[in-house]
Amino acid sequence: MRKSTRIVILETGLRILAGLVGLIFLLLGIGFLTLPEVVATSFYVEPARAVGINAIRGDFGALFLGMGFFCLLGVLTVHRQLLVVPIVFLALVLLGRLTSVIVDDVPAAAAGAMRAEGIFLVILVLSLFFASANRSPANGGISLRAFVAPRVLLAIALVATLVFGILLSQKRIGTALVRAIGSRSVGENALEGLPDGLHVGLCGSGSPMMDRKRAGPCVFVLAGRALYIVDTGPSSVRRLELMRLQPGEIEAVLLTHFHSDHIGDLGELMLKRWARGAAKDPLPVFGPPGVETVVRGFNLAYSLDSRYRVAHHGLETTPPGGAGGVARPFDFPNGEDAVVIIDADGVKITAFLVDHRPVEPAVGYRFDYKGRSLVISGDTLPSETLRRQSAGVDLLLHEALQPTMVRMLGDINRKGGRSNIARITTDILDYHTFPEEAARIAEDAGVRQLVFYHIIPPLPVSVLEESFLGDAKESFSGPISIGVDGLMFSMPAGSRRVEKEWIW
Image (cartoon, rainbow, N blue to C red; front, side):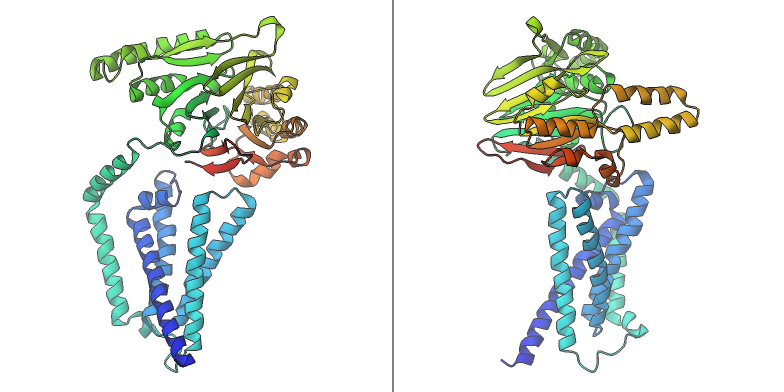
């Protein structure tokens, strides 16, 4: 077979592949235009109200429709040089993703998208290259006639028909989506299939300050098959459900202290664990002295609600004995600063005192399971007890407040006449830990990885994260992560690995 013939065959194969790439872009563009929220979810994009949906229809729809149009125009006509348009856009997309690799953490889903886009880019570049190698005199300049060729007009008409067909069939499509989404979500559990070991995830990594990316403090810990929740900050239960965890499987809640941002969703968690799991026993809630008052208050507040649900759904669906919670207080006898509160099925949980004065007592927790370990600090100043309890752990989840940023917010509120907020902003500086202080604790304790949560102040964009860390990276030699809701760290038994992934 002559060389020119092989080039023609290769060029034809690449032309077909480039056409398929164009069809994929075209279908994505139609999807963004007609079903923006559905397709955006597949790209892990969450639209903010109607303005966000409008942007997705316009910007995402235009990008993919444009790339698809020029792909197909380059394939269906002799003007293969039109492939330069999608090539440039794909190169810019990959540049943006590579920038994110440098600046942000990259979830596995994003890495998969990068691979696909890289393959598409290679196909289009090779198609353009071999078409150039096999260029004929007919491949001249581009004229308006190329855009109004019968096959191009037919393709535009088919796309327009498909768009209007989808828009006119939204009721039928919506019904099908309800069935599909419902079938997929029933019994869905993000923790199924995880290897035996310790797994810790953030269903709330924020503070009392408003933060779109972070609910109030809430951490889940899966030790073997036992699921524990540490603190239940406002909005954390919805985060937990969005992360596809099952409230009915929770063994117990552990409270670090009783500030409102750590207990705000306790009632909702007790309710959903009962109603969704048909629990026959109330939810155990562990905490230092005072937990009895908190649990009793939520039980009283939800007592009418639970009565309604039993009357409506029946004794089998909502067993009355499973409603609410039951307090499991612990104390520190003989002046000790740590006590084991759970030791069963290979899981050992140690509560230890921290310094969050005037909040007393306040505690942190250490989890040990099959040679893997983690510590959750709760709210605290730098604590010697916490340093001792963190000795050699695989992961330290530590609260953090960035003082420079908080002082700046205090000055802004003071100048704006909001003296009360300015006073609170100043006061919180004296009972939280700064990132550099937490990093030194982690280094001294020989911690393998450090994760910041209970982030103060909010970090609405990732470019603020380096400023938040300050000099923390100079004080700790291991990996440091800034917590965001949906982040999970896995520590499989029998290994030394700490694996990070997103489950939301």
